[in-house]
Amino acid sequence: MKRVLVLAGTSQARELIGAMPEGVEVTASLAGVTRTPVDLGCATRVGGFGGVDGLVAYLRAERIDILVDATHPFATQMTRQAASAAAETGVAHVILQREGWTPEAGDDWRFVNEFDEVAGIVPEGCTVFLGTGRQTLEQFANMSGRRLLCRVIDPPQRDFPFAGGQFVVGRPPFSIEEEVAFFTRESVDWLVVKNAGGARSRSKLDAARQLGLPVVMQRRPALPDAPVVRSVADCLAWLAAQG
Ligand code: NAP
Image (tube, rainbow, N blue to C red; front, side, top):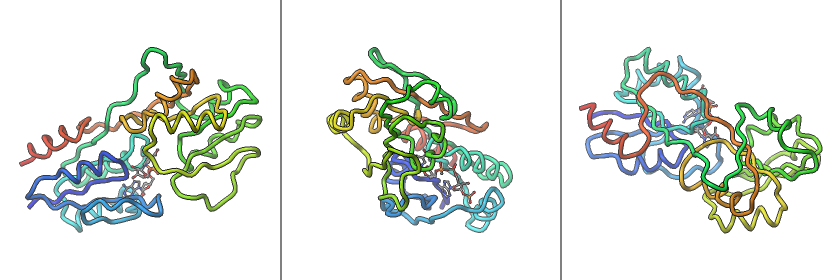
């Protein structure tokens, strides 16, 4: 029986695990970022491996045959380390990463590579919705004079680090109507978003278009040299081809 390790933390990882065929033994891996992770319905380990060496040791100890990196497109470090560990161990490796979003008619998007570029785009006095996650907050330290709203999954255990800003607690997905209501209620002028891709979290972009709000979109980081599949169906086909 093939032993598959799925690096998870995304809805695509969850869908993949739910669709795994008979005859594979699946273990999921979560970083341990959210305090109450969703039950993935398979054996699940939680927490970092301890860099490339730790992952290499894990792959060997657990006799993993196949490593599926289904982490978020912006989980750059894990994706890089997974590629290195797979190369070192010879474990078959694939990256499952959905396509990024592209603008549609009526969208007003500006693209950046790094969040410290946002201050040069968004004027002072604006209310800015950050859909970029708690861990990115310090990258907005040069945004003084703007009101920042940072959406987080877990209730924060610390005060908001910048004057005038606040955390907004909520677990995705959100409908377009919910996003429109939220942006209107909070008088949001700009959105800052990572190009995560996927239908479920596109709702904030559809809401921005409806309201005529501009969006700063962070481009995706480059992927390591490894096979990439864009959908759960393509990933299952890739797995089937491994014999
Ligand atoms: P990251 O910066 O690429 O990784 C930081 C460290 O966290 C890694 O070096 C690794 O620790 C550990 N790690 C990350 N993903 C892991 C996994 N699936 N299983 C075990 N350890 C993992 O990752 P991140 O951006 O903090 O993301 C962490 C998790 O949240 C990922 O599972 C990702 O799919 C999910 N997520 C991220 C985002 C985002 O915007 N970045 C959004 C939604 C969900 P060691 O070096 O000790 O092995």
